[in-house]
Image 1: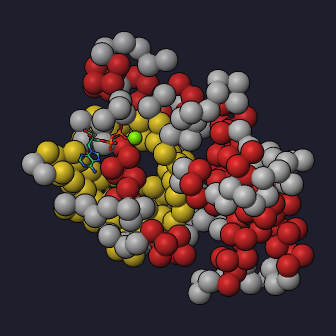
Image 2: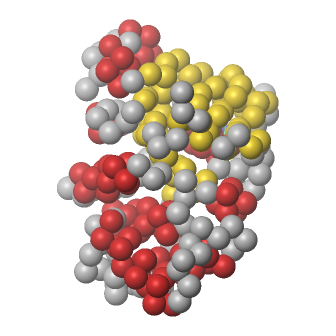
Length: 253
Ligand SMILES: Nc1ncnc2c1ncn2[C@@H]1O[C@H](COP(=O)(O)OP(=O)(O)O)[C@@H](O)[C@H]1O
Ligand SMILES: [Mg+2]
């Protein structure tokens, strides 16, 4: 069995007296793509906040590459290679697309954990930014100001910034939220391409199940704060408990 890049162990979270997550455990193997699905209010974002260091759990632990990272701050996790695709606030709105990518790549290189040691000059960073521009399908948009991009393009730029950071594990919280129906397929395609490189492990959360069925290696189902299933998509599709809990007994579309 390959090494787990992420191990979530018996996570519990309460706000005041309300239990939002109960005894949630799962692992993500290196290079794999796992999606966590569940209806609104299931606790998905809370779980992400705990994994990405935004919040501390009430109980349980999170391990990244075998290291206990429970409660570590987000910036430290980013340095270690655990990146979260944040909302648009993480983009430098008045910089161009290419500058956003270059700044992140260069900052990463200057940081203590140097993964881009071979990129040493300004031009090298620009070349890297250009490569990423193509990977996230923003060719021809490098000179646009980030604030002038469409919502979907900004999400692509955020993904590009995770690539510039060379995150080993990228977390996505409903990447298609607020993205128009016409722009959704291209955004999913970008995520699919990142999976194809095999260089990044991906944990994605989504409440629209249809879209992620065929890109996920495994799907975990969160219902009322409890993980009720975690398996390959085809097995999840046929799971009676998942159908009952998540779709009121209806078939999974
Ligand atoms: N900071 C908070 N304080 C109190 N309750 C919260 C907080 N964050 C989330 N919750 C509650 O936790 C539950 C799960 O929310 P969330 O994790 O956002 O679900 P999801 O992302 O699956 O829609 C909801 O009932 C929500 O109201
Ligand atoms: Mg959410």
